[in-house]
Amino acid sequence: MVSKPEANSETVILGEIGRVHGLKGWLKLISFTSPIENILDYSRFTAQVGGRSQELELDEHSRANKALLVHFKGYDDPETARLLTGTVLKIANEKLPQLEHGEFYWHQLQDLRVVNQHEQIFGRVSHLLETGANDVLVVKADSESIDDRERLIPYLVDSVVIEIDLENQIIRVDWEADYLD
Figure 1 (cartoon, one colour):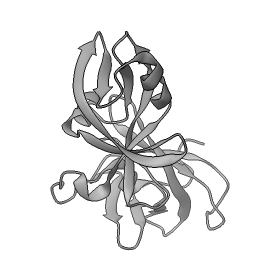
Figure 2 (tube, rainbow, N blue to C red):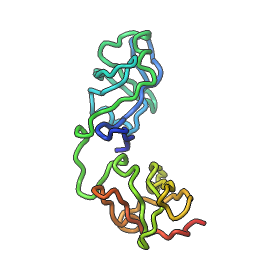
Figure 3 (cartoon, one colour):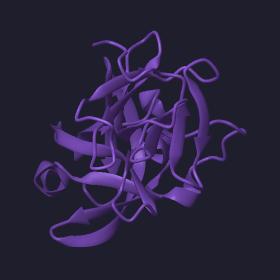
Figure 4 (cartoon, rainbow, N blue to C red):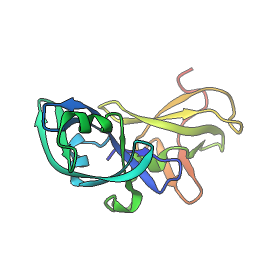
């Protein structure tokens, strides 16, 4: 599942509400999960609506071509539903399913320090890219990096990504500093 981290790391953003669809308060849903339908595994979200935090309850959903359409309880007309446009949908991290040993959510990898087999620090994971063939770590240089380059490192476990140590906030990679110069 793809997700976006929150600054306090107790919640994760799973999607964003798009434009109003129809006359009964339905809205387009932009899902940050993979596959996009995984967001529908949750029915209650925390959101900032009108400057205050509130819980939104998803009570209906459907597909329209490749888009997800949703309805939230109490938002039954276009004018009311429009108040939700642009709102991000969050859940508590503890509501995410437990992963198998050695599996990670993308948001867990973001901001980890990336170090190669020669103990050279490349920077921190800014975000990940989904390329189809394999995911890619986007590593941005920081004050401890060996240089100021941004690196794109394939997320290939056991061949390029040697170790992920969440406790020490480090990803160890088999990657030379001069690759892709």
